[in-house]
Amino acid sequence: VTYFALGSIATKQNSALKERLGIAEKRGGTRGPENVWGSAAMALICAFLSRALPEYSEMFRIGYVASIASKLSDTLGSEIGKAYGNNTFLITTLSRVPRGVEGAVSLEGT
Image (cartoon, rainbow, N blue to C red; front, side, top):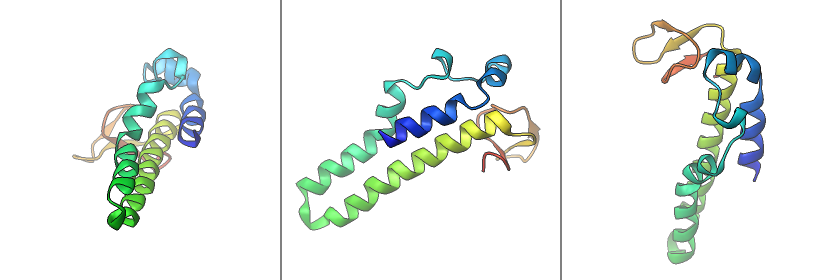
């Protein structure tokens, strides 16, 4: 629930600009079930394995938290970068690209 709420808030940041640039999420910036399920798949697997293999439960609990934390940070960074990124660079070549390009990073989104 927290992931969905924070992701939705981040997605709606500066949504008018993202719409104008054609980089906004579908459905007017509203996150859908596929965003949550796609992100929650590894967490769900870790939760299941934590119960199924109790001798490894601590490891799977760490995996659960890590999967949610990494996906949330990726979502927040992407949405903040699309909304406020002034200087975006392609991570593989360090060449400047417009905001919203897949693989682009910015100081604001980082």
